[in-house]
Amino acid sequence: MKLNTKQIVITVLLLILSFLIIRFLKVPNLEVAGYRISTSDILINLILILGTFYCGIFSGVILSIMAPIISFVVSGGGFIASIPAILPCIMAGNLILVLAAWLIRGKKNEAGLFPLVLVLGATLKFITMRLLVLNWIIPTWKSSLSHLQINTVKNMFMLAPLFTTLFGVFLACVLWPPIKLFFKASK
Image 1 (cartoon, helix red, strand yellow):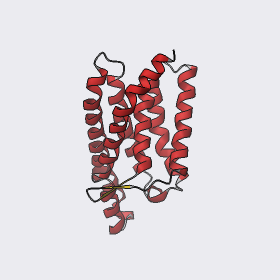
Image 2 (cartoon, helix red, strand yellow):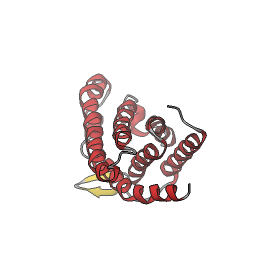
Image 3 (cartoon, one colour):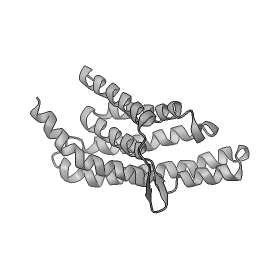
Image 4 (cartoon, helix red, strand yellow):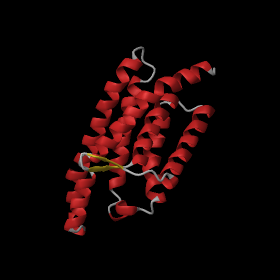
């Protein structure tokens, strides 16, 4: 299965939208259970899901890999510049979420299944990123990190990524049915 021209164009538009959100969206972050939840990260998770639902797995994979790179480049590296290996952890988590979205895409009971499957995908994304950070990033980079940096990395991958992804899942569950109807009606 390959991308057709329409899917390529929509994927590129979603990448541009991701860039615009990361670069220019100045919406305050949310505070949930004492964790700072990035509004732009919520929207990026929404884009990953909707891109996969509409364009398929290849679009989702491209978005999963490129969105963290765009974020890294646009933000000037931020904290990830000191530990670049965090980028593949985020990409791996994104790929798991996209895979969950792709597995239910177009199924007969899609509307009934996708909230449950996407919550499972969000949970697996969080578990994957957390395990990679705790079992690979911190042990590998420990000698070059200060105690403060280690604590910052641990805190970054506590529950905030789970909440961020779950908010994106919620928005996808609310927005996908009318989007799907719109595209069906426009054919």
